[in-house]
Image (cartoon, rainbow, N blue to C red):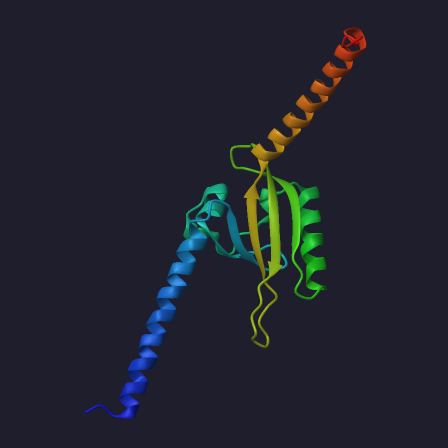
Length: 171
């Protein structure tokens, strides 16, 4: 016959198994995101990253740990990025959104939209870490600029048409 201690041990073991499975599923979801996911410190050192970030660095997923985010940015963009994350530490429970260019291994420049927030861990002495999500918006930016250009051309064409070929006035 089971006593209460055995039942408590089995229940605890089941809870631990559920938590481990949940953690694995969460990590799989973050890993399969199409954009960048990383946990970094204030210096930009990567403590966790997903496969998209590894692909950008052209390294194995396991080799991301300890790498710096800074090589992705120009000096100017990295200084702006660091300035934003430093300012974030002085605010409580704030998030920032910023757009910067990054340089890929192949030399191409891509425009990224970044969402950065503190990683909240309720544990004394835990270091200040940030969760970073980055999404490539290069094609969207290009399409937006093209759309604005086409709108300008259309309004210019309408102005020319109305100036030189006015609509007939009905009698």
